[in-house]
Length: 262
Ligand code: 0L1
Ligand code: MG
Image (cartoon, rainbow, N blue to C red; front, side, top):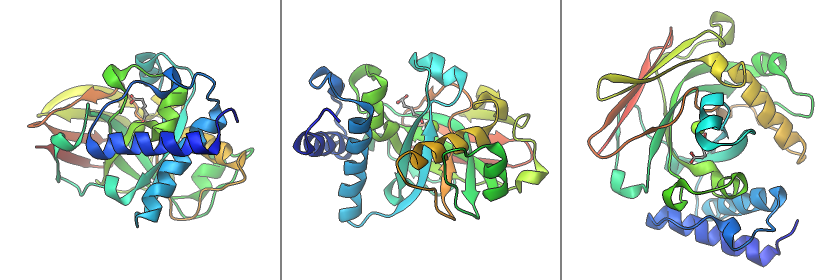
């Protein structure tokens, strides 16, 4: 690690304040170019610790930048991982106040819920499918705290991979009843299709994103516990939203889920 404990705590406080106070910031590597990957995840962990200390509940985990479309959109080549707490969770069809967000975008995702824990290294698609209770449609609202989306991957990791809101719903399915590679996804904004994809857009198979998360945590001596909800990453590029927009995701055989921005 290149940063001191004090700097990590300061960066966590800074980034979380930007989120809570709806303020943007230059990317943190401008001032801390020496920040390494362990520092970036340590800042993310410190943000989670701040939220838990205030009574938040950890309700899930996420993989991000898992599709080629999204990687191309961001000019990166590797996935990233983050956490979801209760304050991010939106009820199906509910309204999100756009004024509480800086520059929101939505992503169509397949969400997994585990019936067994998953531990890396060596976690693979087969292990993920065997450990999955069900999958269901999910929309992630990302909201980068970095001014004009000018960031690098380490800054994004520190900023909890832009996590902001999410909704899951529709019709949960057992993994044996759906081919997650060929399953089609249609993201609609105000009734119009704005992004189309298939499960295979996510690292070839959405379960591969969950395996990558398990392997990432395994390298840090952690596992994904039973019951965890995991967002496997956007299957298409992210779509900008603003107040007045209604967004729905339809996933083949799994119904639809939506939310609104007011
Ligand atoms: O969920 C994700 O794909 C993370 C995206 C992080 C970068 C961004 O804000 O677009
Ligand atoms: Mg996402």
